[in-house]
Amino acid sequence: MSKKSFSRKDALLEHLLQGHPITVLESMILFGIPNLTVELTRFRKRGWVVKRRSVPFARIIARVNRHATLSPPDNLDIQSMQLTEWWISQ
Image (tube, rainbow, N blue to C red; front, side, top):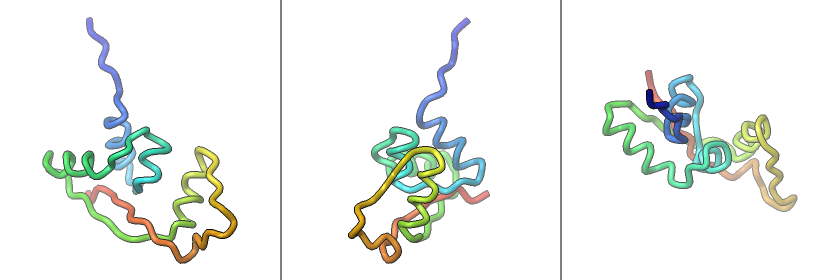
């Protein structure tokens, strides 16, 4: 009997299917996936509808800090910076 492993890519897809958005920063920190674009392209090729929008960097820091500790430099204007987040449209 072989044991199927749960890969980082599987964890990312599960995260998205649960309705959670993802950014490049989160994919690196939470899933160890440095190139999110490649994985999103694979999901699209498998038939998933992947959508995107810009969100404030401060929102992403708050999400990351639920699971890890991320503190940007004090002189970085995290309110005006924007990152792109992706999600799977159901």
